[in-house]
Amino acid sequence: MKPLEGLAWTNRFAALGADFFTELPAQGLPDPHWVARSPACAELLGWPADWAARPEALAALSGNASWPGMRPLATVYSGHQFGVWAGQLGDGRALWLGEVDTPAGPQELQLKGGGRTPYSRRGDGRAVLRSSIREFLCSEAMTALGVPTTRALCITGSEMPVIRETVETAAVVTRVAPSFIRFGHFEHFAHHDQLEALRRLTAFFIAHHAPECADAPEPAVALLKKVALQTADLVAHWQAVGFCHGVMNTDNMSMLGLTLDYGPFGFMDAFDPGHICNHSDDRGRYAYARQPSVAFWNLHALAQAFVPLMDGEQEAAGERLLEAVEAFRDRFASQMLGRLRAKLGLDGEQPADQALADDFLKLMAASRADFTQSFRRLSRALTHPEPLRDLFIDRDALDAWLARWRPRTAPHAQARMLAVNPAVVLRNHLAEGAIRAAQGGDFSEIDRLLKVLSRPFDEPALPGDAALPPDWAQSLEVSCSS
Ligand code: AMP
Ligand code: MG
Image (cartoon, rainbow, N blue to C red; front, side, top):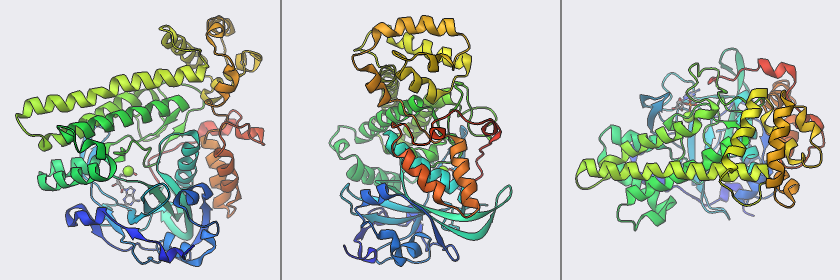
């Protein structure tokens, strides 16, 4: 293996030109140290096992050095935040380093927390250790759950103070994805009447990330439909694991249908469809049960941005775009039902399955039963119903439901259910334990959790990793501040 400095970098995005970004070097972390690394992500990149032992790795991934071929740049995008047009945003603290060739195809690397950019507005361009640990662990945990997501290669840290509600310390996460292009990139050029740039971006995205759309009669319509379907798949998967994104602004929506920009996200403990994981979301726009309709709303914002790309009469063109977005509905419904059938271990498909699943969720909500544990314990309920019953207040109602469910279960339902209903998800209190240890200088809990979270369907060696949250977890608050 060549030294990392000898990696071949391409940067196809940079070829788009100056309308799309500002090139600038990272502002490195002073006196950086390693906080965490993901062996699975390094493997995806095809990097050697000792990659992190090389001094050039720490220097570059803390923003202190550049390898030949990297072209650090911050991209410009806009977007709708909490349903309102927010104007120009952009990579305020993320720096795009370029693309590396990997066995899994070209992957972009991005530093998050590498200093101010022209798009930082009032921000300091930094990320704190706390939120970096959350993003790192959740990116890798979602991957192991099978949920599409950007990846995280590593965290580098520093004693450099960063001011949030309190004084914290700075960190940089290296993120990896085939593309970090967001809905907001398209909205930006549409809103600013930069039609030529909008066309170039669309052609670029189709050429590199959606080539099958190129030959469609209307490539923009085909692309929008593809994004709608991928987004439906993504959100159905979120709902099925009880994941709340927290800030589904259009600038946080990936054109590849990846989970993107981990901020105040959360996996639900007690099931509440109205659960709001983001303390700053006082009106609950991004509550758990609203995620599908918000995704649909966001797709309409993307459709709006595609209007100038369309030929012919504008109203009819708009209709065709709306039709493409409509594809979200059926796809989400069928994906969601498919995931629920699998979670319930059902045999084949019957019309009453939706009601069966909905009724279980209603019982869970009425008892505020733990989301992850309810499905995990249900997986064993054919032979051991008691642990499941312990989670419910109205046991008669649960028993009545179990009597409907049992005859619908497939052969080997237990094994099949245990393979789709995780034992371990990144509950807030688990992340918090790793964060508190790291803030005290001990990073070993991050590594330990990473290992556990990379096998989410196995019973963890420490039962506490799968257990119901402790009482102190109730008081944890997660806000946009990161
Ligand atoms: P987010 O809510 O984290 O998705 O960020 C929304 C916008 O604020 C994006 O343009 C970010 O780049 C920017 N931003 C968030 N935090 C910071 C920060 N600490 N410094 C600079 N820009 C930031
Ligand atoms: Mg964002």
